[in-house]
Length: 316
Image (cartoon, rainbow, N blue to C red; front, side):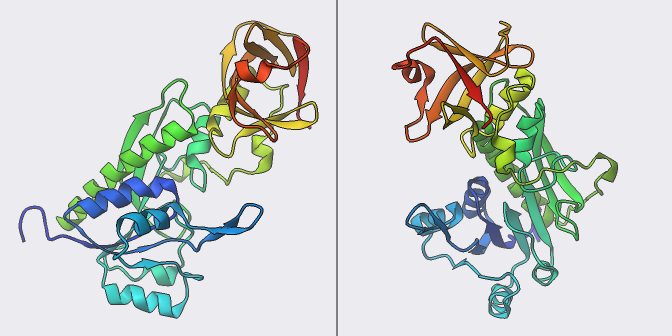
């Protein structure tokens, strides 16, 4: 065996956009991508049109000849038998549902997960959202071997990443995906060389990152300005924080904190082409919004047509 070790035969399991950079990196690497597994198409929109996952769309556009599996059940015997026939050395996993034990037992070198947080912080479905929601200044990517509990396996590699002051979910998500690709290849190369040293997670430092639900997106203007600003950036461009303007839902994509104190939380004041909203302590300037039934726009465009320099935003 040479110093770099023999190439590994990989099956990649992923679903969302976060998985795309690691997937492309493995495709371009010396390792052998035997197959890709992703979730079934989902129904969306008024017509309930079937939409592919980002991973499926990428594979169909870029690698149509490579086996792509979309099992209805991860315990389906036919699906499991097909994976065994690929004879993978290892599974690489990114943004994929919880895997049953029978699936985890297939690759002899285990299942390597790429997770966008510095574990044990932010275990769960929405680590990037909660990192920003909580106003953290540093995050990162962890590769670990999947064990019995969610995101609780032994850590292999970790690398931190500084969060930029006005960074939103979309920007941070992309940068972490790129970092995930770097750590995925580094991990595979070390595994190929039999240089695997892991360490357990510190359970006392574990924090949850549950799925983002509707109540996490609704803005309460009685909270501090920095809390609301973090909420807006954490949920932009999706699923998007929102409030109500004259009975219609108003989505907020970008805002910044202003020192000016406005009375009565939720009260909005227009100054020239700018909108300021009173919070518990300071105020926020809204930068990009989308009113129900309208397109996303800068606040200067939203202001056009308003008949008063004062209005109110509400939580319901």
